[in-house]
Image (cartoon, rainbow, N blue to C red; front, side, top):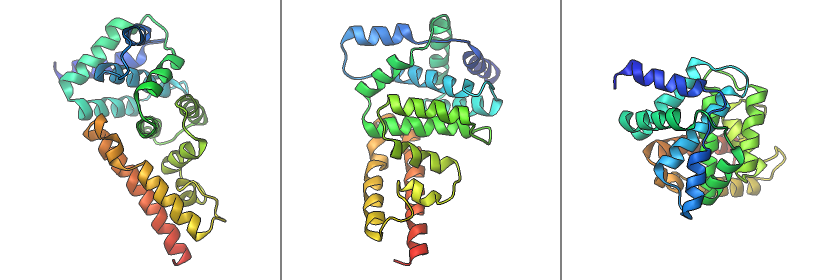
Length: 229
């Protein structure tokens, strides 16, 4: 399938109002399977991506390109084409059930993998240069449904939005934290966000986790330099 058709598929999918996954999620739970299939994961991830893109009422080409590039890099053009096509042909007349998607992910994905999903969705929101208040609210809603701590959500947010004391926010700390608290938080986060935790999701997720891991290391180094320990 040539590039312009693939681009059209991607654009058509994300323009679908109320596109949905009821059929796929329903069939998954009826089967009684305890692990998510690759295709179910990819289609559900596309649904979440579409909700982030539409959260602020604007659909930008940069956001569409970010998702398309991510999926092609993660799964290859042929497989990505198939996922977009399945979504378009089978779910565009159904409504997305965020609760069903979150239930599916909570059952099938470990905590670290759900963190990586939120990190990916933040990347979509930032693709057009800024993350709006509405997008942050939508991402926080996802995070809560994925049963992630607010501290972990705030840490990922600080990686994408520069804030005062950003290094402390990345390490989930107040600036008043002791040196021992800084060291402990760094160790805990380094373990939680280690790339090995998401190896099962594929190389592109490992690379994203490595980028996140490096930001945690950088935040820790900045605090060490600031405090001189």
